[in-house]
Length: 152
Image 1 (cartoon, rainbow, N blue to C red):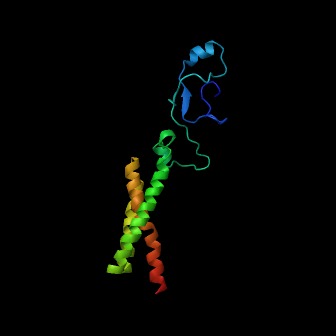
Image 2 (tube, rainbow, N blue to C red):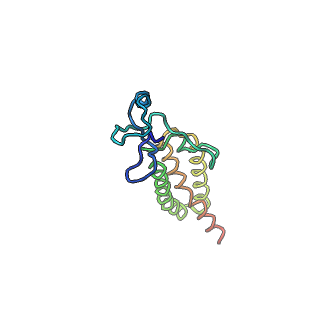
Image 3 (cartoon, helix red, strand yellow):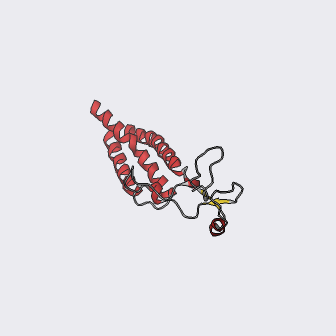
């Protein structure tokens, strides 16, 4: 570990996404046991190893390797979900006022169901983000319409 992985700048922890770009056969033949911080650094070539002890199943982030330079993608997907919730709230509010609460409730449940099922078949970030947008589009409205119907 100390020979192959650089430490993060200013932190004593090892970098999860980088490795030294040296010939390890030569380094070990020379008897070196510690890395030279001046060695060139590259992105890890061996990929990522996931720990499934806390969550014993793969997630979209593990299946699509949203790590290292792609580690912001889950945050973007969550933001897109909430953008969908804003747009859906405005649109389904208008639909509920124009056509009634029950058609709006049925419509948002159908969209939420289709997008939720569609999420499991996505193969890249943009497909996933589009499905999450539509899940968010329907999410709050499924509850809001029921509360309004139940109150009256």
